Image (cartoon, rainbow over all chains, first blue to last red; front, side, top):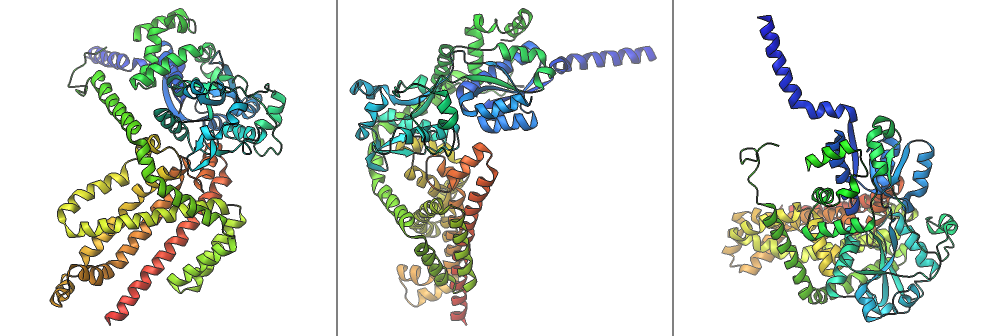
Amino acid sequence: MIRRALSVTGIIFGLMAAWVSPVANAAECGRVTIADMNWASAELAAYVDKFILENGYGCKVELVPGDTMPTTVSMTEKAEPDIAPEIWMNSVRQVVNKSVKEGRLKIAGEILNDGGEEGWWVPKYMVDKHPELTTLEAVLKRPDLFPNPENKKRGAVYNCPSGWNCEIITSNLYKAFDVEKAGFDLIDTGSAAGLDGSIAKAYNRKEGWFGYYWAPTAILGKYDMVKLDMGVPHSSKEWDRCTGQGNCADPKKNDWTKSIVMTVTSGDFAKKSPEAFEYVSKRSWPNTVVNELLAYMDKNQAGGEEGAEKFLKSHEALWTKWVPADVAKKVKAAL
Amino acid sequence: MSEPSWLFQFPEMNKESLRALKKAFDVGYRDFSRAYGESIETFFEPLLTFLVWFEDVFTASPWWLVIAALAALAWFVSRNWKLVAGVTLAFLAIGYFGMWEDTMSTMAMITVCTILSIVIGLPVGILMARSDRLQAIITPALDVMQTMPSFVYLIPVVMLLGIGRVPGLLAVVIYAIPPIIRLTNLGIRLVDREVLEAADSFGADYWQRLFGVQIPLALPNIMAGINQTIMMALAMVVIASMIGVKGLGQPVLKAVTNQYFALGLFNGLAIVALAIVFDRMTQAYGQRLQSHRQISNE
């Protein structure tokens, strides 16, 4: 009787174990939170990480919506989320470096191995019509080609959204290059959605547009734009002294440099889940792949999840280098 | 993996057709904005000119003149020294903490939005009170306007009109106009039938009845509607600044992205101060209208 009862319980437990097995596996890796930043390339990376960590390492992954500053602060102060797949170091270099020194954050690796590109851009169709418009100097001579919608007599420079670090940089360069005297107003776009919308509107009607943007992004994958030659070399000393600082009194001419784009984890993550940390530190892709996927996502109105699946199916040679063979096998099986 | 079955999985539209449907919408809208964007923009041009001019008036006037005008307005609507002192103090504090220009931009925007809402909302509310069928059509539309997340319509508007004041104004008006429509409708419907019968027996025609009886009796409700419209317009300030409208919303956004607690708090409080000032002024005015009515009733 007892034996039978035991065997029944055994079966029940066996069933439960089978039922719960993903959770049991997860115990090895544990719960991992990944910041799902509100721009497309980072969203794609977050979903790729989610798929690989869940299916290859048996982690239980949760995506947490985020943005550069709130996420870095939360990771520094609360060690949550564990992974920020895409941090553009130009905008938060000092904050991140300080936290890394204190051991609160850890830099896992460079996710974009070509680096990101930031700068002032104009649409390609403007350059086709006026071939000289590839330099800032030439653009500044023609405010009439880039009219400010609220004051047609002046030109407009579309700034980076309020509160982003690139807003400070663009405002400083606006001063340094005497753009105001050249007849251009600096337009606050408010949010990434506002900035993107202004580009989409200009493109729909082939109007002049001149402002800040960055790559790899869906926008630059979709709309052909030309990055302006600023006419001066990048000076990192000047950048740290003034260009990147708010309230700098005497900004000097400067150019952007290649942005280093890193995957950052909370300080304890490497100890908590060493295998997962190993993976994120190896995960790195070229801009061509990212642009291709962003264009795919945009064309098909696909979210990060579908984009990640597409990537894992079409770029096997790339991602299998990031993980050990047995993990790769598991990920492939789940596709 | 388990068999997909309609019992466990919702029998949803297949992915391809859903994608095609969404794309059809987007392409359709894009073609529309390419074809008509420019003419729609020209249509709103006078409004933009007015907005820019109005904001210039606010920001270019000397601060003491603006405060004096507001204090005078407060006195005119309330005849209450406490309110006048409160308004003056609130604006002095805003100026002292360095938010004068942003506050003026916001105030200009809110004023234009309120005027526009009244100009459109009042007639709509009156029409709605006349016809039950119209009420049945407009009420759900108002529900959509109040609950649809603003960004859903903001981005299409930005693609059509660009970023800046006009799309911001549209967003604010869409969100802020329902209360005035609803309360005008309600106020007129609440007017006593016997009073109307009396007006009819004196031989009042439709317009006399409307302007002589219904609107005056509905005024306290209409004032409450205007009050709510202003409050909701102020609540939209931050959203509007996300598409490049100048004002108190921008520092709030900056504070949010950078965790500048104090900056956010100061500007948030300035919005609250504006809200309280306008709320007290419109309420005092509404009450004065009501007390006037009570005296005349006696």
